[in-house]
Length: 175
Image (cartoon, rainbow, N blue to C red; front, top):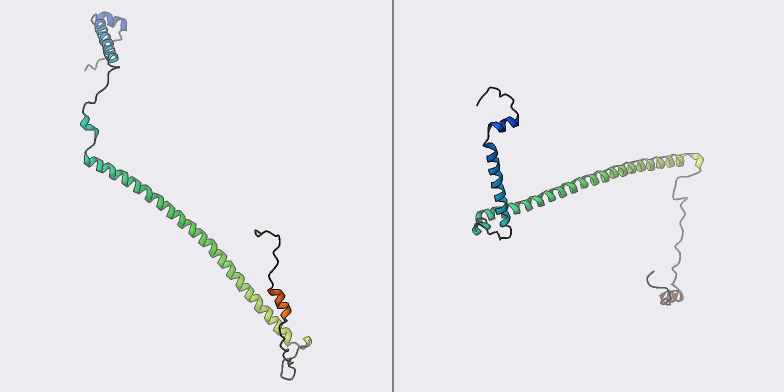
């Protein structure tokens, strides 16, 4: 390799220095045109395969390809089932949290109602003990005993009317 810089020479001067360069270019163009004609002449011919035994892959390669396809399908199914289970778990946790908040609210309301009920009972007991209400403590002397009512026989006419079948009307059965 030459490290010295080359002087600038125009393309026309270079061609004049190498008289054989033009003839080489013509030869290259001539060879290219003959190649094109030879390729175009084979267009109508049928292409034959070089080695028909290469159409099938070896058995070990077919087994590996089958295993790859099978593992792809299994991986796809596993990813799908994992996503399904994960989404189901997240959904269940959200529902559980929602229902647990409802339970806590109901328990708080129950405690408030129990407290309110006991406060009302206490107020009623205090009011009943005051003499201004006019209530007296129950004793045997002021107990009222009512005699039992006599037993009645059922009226047969009214039960027979109830037992009679209803007349069929013109109302449709679909209602």
